[in-house]
Amino acid sequence: MRRLLLIPALLAALLWSAPCFGQARSQLGPLCTTDTTPADQMIDACTKIIALKVFSGEKLATIYFWRAVGWNKKGNYAQVISDATEALRLKPSTAVYNLRGSAYFDKGEYDIAIADFNDALPMGPPSGIIFHNRGNAYRSKGDYAKAIADYDAAIKAGPKSAFSYQNRGASKRALGDLDGALADINEAVRIDPSLPQPLISRAVIWRAKGEIERAIADTSEAIRLAKAKAPVNIMTPPGSVLISAYTQRGLSYEAKGDAAHAKEDYASVLEGVTSDAGSKANQATAKVRLALLKEADAAPRKTAAAPAAESSPAPAPPAPAAAPAAPAARVQAAATGRRVALVIGNGAYAHVKALPNPPNDARAIARSLRDIGFTVSEGLDLDRDTMQKTIHDFLREAARSQIAVVYYAGHGVQVDGRNYLVPVDIEFKAGSRATDAMVDMDTIMAGLDDQIRTNILILDACRNNPMAPQLASTGPSRGIEAGSGLAAPASLGSGSTLGAGTLIAFATAPGQVALDGEGANSPFSAALSRHVGTPGLEVQQMLTRVRAEVVAATKGKQVPWSNSSLLGEVYLAEQ
Image 1 (cartoon, rainbow, N blue to C red):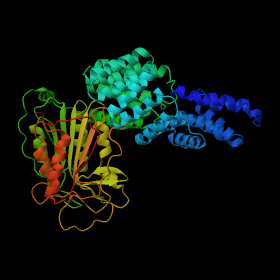
Image 2 (cartoon, rainbow, N blue to C red):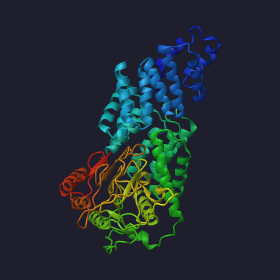
Image 3 (cartoon, helix red, strand yellow):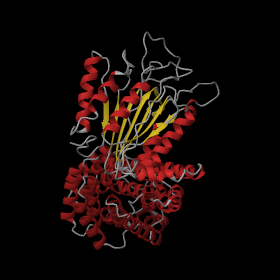
């Protein structure tokens, strides 16, 4: 990326020969337009030059560009975009489009970033840097075929581009081509052994292959390199490399069963200063994983018989049927631990409208998942404390899984764009924060966030918000009052999840009510339990069949909806 900065740098050589600049010329000019200048000095110098009002047009655009570079060093992407936009107004250029596109990328606004890179490409000779950056945006969107094509173009333009090899390898890994990914990332390491980023990417591959010690070795070396020398690329978000390395090493230690070292690494992640979307996602994951490990330390030790039961190849005996108001109960299936599920059904609400069917729905889905080999953690009519414990136990178990399924039936709400699951003891009191009495879905998603796991989250919950006065209803529904509904996730896997992907399925479309049903099950869960165990049925095809059944059963009143970042076909029930 630094090569693009040479374009305005050549222009900058002419700036300081301009008349009327006076004594400040020799002091402020180089500070503003030298990429090694510390960020605060660069911003201050450029600001003072702008205030002098001696430049206009292309020359003033160059000053705004360099001030945007200074903001970029600080990770202040809003200011980068503001200054880059002003520079583009004065004089469009490849360098400025690239800088602004990179800022949008770091904010997680990938479509806008792609638009800027598209505008940059026709403005000059084909640039491997622009292809590389656009590939990054496509990769973050989960469009790996387009990402690989852009990395191919970047490598053709610059065969010694270690980052393009690394990111092409990461894209291949996300598509399941571990050997092709390893070859690309090994080439990146060969081109520049001093870069920590390819080692972090290679560690993810080792962990996916089950070679945990190699993953730990690569991330440890990446941490050493990042500490020894800060990234020379000024476009790299501050602190992002160390945050990524510590996150991946923490996940590797946790996969190894070394909780002590995992906790140390997660704590180091949280000490970092974040600015970009990927680092923020890593910190969210580290926060949840660290809390889970600390909670496990505080919990009473299990009996010696429990580990033996986990490793036994024989199927566990059938669990007795749970009563509607029973606390969470863990049910073991004959599985390897690679496919796990959390199933919760809340219906016996004490202070808001009760729902008769969620416990029935949960039992049906849990039974269907056990039948196809999932290890199921099941909870019925859970209060907040029990619900939190059940979820935390599951997230610890999911750390070593390949596929994790979460199913929830009951009340659910959106507050300020975040989705919450509602325990049966919820009671809204004046002067208290309503969200404290509920379970944040973002916590579950952060706890599952990983580059080697597929996550399927299914919510048969209300689409309405109980914060407003409750409205009368003529029949039971999974809505407490008519409102804005559950929020669609702004992104799925924006950050550390750039691998297997996530799918979230909702029982109904945004702003609509998920019906509880007139029979023993809700329309959505009844259809889901019929299809989830179909051998050889891909999960998105399965949801299409469920959607068709629900629409027919409700005469169009309820239309299930989903959002996916899955990378290809996922099968819950193998052929």
